[in-house]
Structures are given as C-alpha cells and as structure tokens.
Length: 373
Ligand code: UD1
Image 1 (tube, helix red, strand yellow):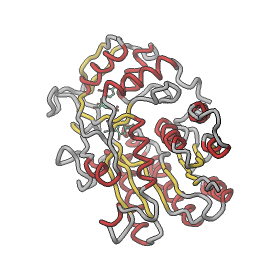
Image 2: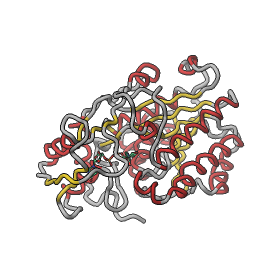
Image 3: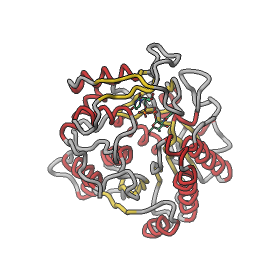
Image 4: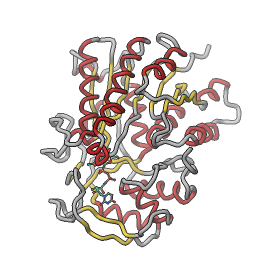
C-alpha cells in the first residue's frame, strides 16, 4: 500500500528561493507542495515552470502518486492577513499540513531603513500570524529563512553560529526577531521544532535554465544586476562598485556565494531534520530549535565576481569605483561546519557553475518569466 504524501507548505513559493526549494521537494517524490505567495517580488509563471520541469524528469511509466508530487496547490495569500492564511490551513484541517518552509519576506536592506514599519509588518507580524495559525492547526514544524545579516559586522571570520546576533538594519532586525520568536516558542512547547537557516549569498539558477531569478525592476543585488547588464537590459552599462577601501584583499567587499540548488537542498535537509526521531536536537534538550549557516565557507570579492561573470558571459563589464553603500559589511563568510556535521549539508557548486547557470537562465529567458502581472 502506498503511503500518502506529506503536505509541506512553502511561503514565498513563487519567488527565486521558493521556486528552487519547491523543485527540490518535488524531486524527492515524497511531498505534496502547497505554495502561498502574495506576488510581491515573484512571478506567477514560476510555479508552472517548476511543475513542468519536475514532470519532465518523471519516467514514462510514473505512478499517479509520482505525478501528484509534481503538482503544486497554489494560493495567492498575504501572510499579514490572518484570515487569508487561516483559510489555507482550514482547507487541510488540523494536522493536515506536515510542515512549513517560511521564505516569504521583504529583503532589501536600504528600503528597510526607509520604511521600517512595512518590514516589521511583513516580516515579523506575518511570521507571528503564521505561527499562531500553525499552532491552531497542529502544524508544529517549521524551517525559517534567516540571513547572514543577523550577524551585523561580525567579530570573527569565518562566522560561526555562536556569534552574537547584532543586526544593524531594520531588515536584519526582523530576521533576529523572527528567530527569537521561534526559539521562545520551541522553549515553551516540546511539540514545536524549528530550524532557522542563515543564508549567505544565493546565486545561479537551475541548470536547465527553466527556473531562475526574476527580480522586479532594476536588480539591486550584484549578480542579477551583472546578468541584466550582459543581456542589455540595464543602462548605463557601467557598474558602480561600492567602495574599494575595505579591509579585504582587493579592497572590495567579500561575500560567501552558494548555488541556489545547494541552498534549496539545505531546506530539504532541514525539513527532514524536523522529523520526530531527529538526532540534531539531542544537544539542545530544552528546546527543539537550531540555527545553521548555509554558505560555502569561501569569501569572494566584488571584483572576483565581475571577473567570473565576464568569463561566463563573454561580456566586457565596465565598472567604476564609487563610495561605500550604506549598511554594507566588509566580509560575510560563513563557517559552514555545523550544517555539514549535523544536517549533512555541503554547498558543492563553485562560482563558475553559479555564473554559468545564472547566464544560462538569463540568456534563455532575456525577459525572465515575462512581464509581471
Ligand atoms: C544584501 C543584504 C542581505 C540580503 C541580500 C538579498 C546587505 C548588507 N545585505 O546582501 O541582507 O539578504 O542582499 O537581498 O545589504 N555591489 C556593488 N554594486 C552594485 C551592487 C552590489 O558594488 O551595484 C556590492 C555590494 O556593495 C556588496 C556586494 O556587491 O559588497 C554584494 O551585494 P548584494 O548582491 O546586494 O548582496 P549583499 O549586500 O551581500
């Protein structure tokens, strides 16, 4: 007799990270994915692309159950609206959803300084409402998208998870606050288990070129911006490098890039580690809560990124050095040892592959998924 599929709800499912996480979940053929997304920085085509990609990988004689794993139950839902999220949980009933991967959030540091209340509402209040709704419907397992930004300017590089949390921006603080809620909740009730994943810099796209990043408007992040420059979508064609007077080898900021497919596999490992027999919480007997860095443990500078993208695209990027960007941290390089030891996580793909896959997606889809709806 075949076991029924475990239902996993992914918030922000139609976004860059969400779509790759859903693909990773579907690849196991063990989960039925429910996606909720409010369309803020995501494209509705992403989900049909993910489904089509997963279906194309099924064998010709796939079972009905396998086919079902490639389908996504998707809801347009705003997590700041309690009634909307509650309506989704109500559809599946108490205990109907096995676990949640909570990715939906605003993520721009600069913007968070301008409109902090919108960030606290969308990232903190929404997480609170989600947790309350989960509690009501006996769904007590969650993987949470956190960020390396929780470390502020870290005192040691590479950064271990034991580093004090000291985010500078409202955005970073929303991540610290949400992590704190999860930690407190797990301390209050042994039914709950939660894992925060502190992402370093995700990059690239699925190697098929079917799914990738489709930022709304002009990309603010370095790699998508370079891809848009190479495809001719961004004018002027000179990249502004924000500062070359940092205490780093070439003076430009250093980040720890990891392939989006590796990041997605980290979510899968975290979700599996929430199972009742999981060993990872043995070291935290008071609460089933853990936080892990997801990075490669390798620092790469802005100039190295430009060079890697030049090699991947053949495009001769022009750049000029300008002043520092407010809120930038000189070096964010992970110590990924804990995630490797406890989750079995390893970010294997190197920068050349990330740039190759980013460019593959961008050149196959010059307009991304098409116009935003
Ligand atoms: C930023 C946020 C991070 C957030 C992530 C995703 C900070 C400190 N971190 O990461 O919390 O989760 O975006 O949105 O803001 N750069 C240029 N020129 C550009 C763009 C970027 O020189 O036009 C440089 C930046 O100064 C930085 C590096 O490239 O040193 C990477 O920038 P970016 O891609 O925006 O990512 P982070 O700043 O690391």
